[in-house]
Length: 299
Ligand code: B12
Ligand code: SF4
Ligand code: SF4
Image (tube, rainbow, N blue to C red; front, side, top):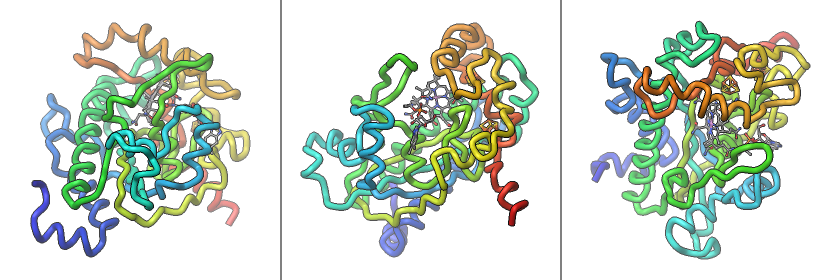
């Protein structure tokens, strides 16, 4: 039991506000949102929380944009309950959050040119452990209130396959964030939100009806300066292995760098994976939507 009687009443009065506040509170107070070796070092800043309609047609479009095996929220929920998608409740929603990296972590990675900083790697490793627990917490909160709920990333059906371009999954968390109106993709492939690109994201599918957040972006790339006016390209110079060009992001090169070239760092940093994210720091989109300034100039 994680909810008191009073909390249940608050949930019933305004479920959207309750869930958003519960996620923020969890990030503020969870000991897992702290690095184990540095006293009081918070991993993620206050989360951004938005909602999508689980039957938004964009989820079916992802079967063409990403891969036919990419699950819709309806399929993801049904699979977890061993039912067919048609036997799920009429209305479904997706709760989607962004966990922005704190300034000190971003600053430490800005100083690097070849490999990720120790703080970035610890954020990658321990920060995803926090993200996993947050997914569990949100799903539990919803089931306790009597709704169906699942975090697809934590299910045994979640998988990463490969094609000629490199790895891809059957549940892309950034595409879910795009559907919920959190931001857009970019030249480097990262997802640019109002808090920038240096973040991780997560989500839960539920039968609770939540108000869908508006998708304000003009196109799937409109938060990236390069796609707005051909400028910037700062991420190209930041990548130590030339995985980013004007044609986009070479996933295979990036993956090989993370998996093989810098695997030696894992022992030194004492983590199971290091991440990299040099292309997400010391760039104009690091902690903000860089196109906001352009829009202000033309107003
Ligand atoms: C496989 C994987 C990788 C692979 C491949 C990445 C990739 N681009 O697919 C590798 C190993 C290279 C990788 C590297 C990294 N990863 Co990774 N990875 C994943 C994983 C597990 C699956 C990604 C996936 O399914 N991709 C599917 C393919 C098809 O997506 P895509 O190529 O990006 O899609 C393009 C098209 O759809 C296109 N598009 C074309 N037409 C249209 C039309 C519309 C309407 C739309 C919406 C899009 C669209 O836009 C997209 C961008 O170009 C996710 C976790 C998850 N389950 O989502 C994390 C994830 C993507 N990784 C993440 C991170 C942080 C990283 C690293 C920074 C490592 C680190 N932590 O230090 C680097 C960054 C590399 C980069 N430059 O983006 C974050 C992303 C956060 C962010 N800011 O974007 C995720 C979401 C993990 C998380 N839970 O937060 N990763
Ligand atoms: S660094 Fe510039 S070009 Fe690269 S993703 Fe960010 S805004 Fe786009
Ligand atoms: S594209 Fe990959 S290898 Fe290049 S800077 Fe970004 S995360 Fe690192």
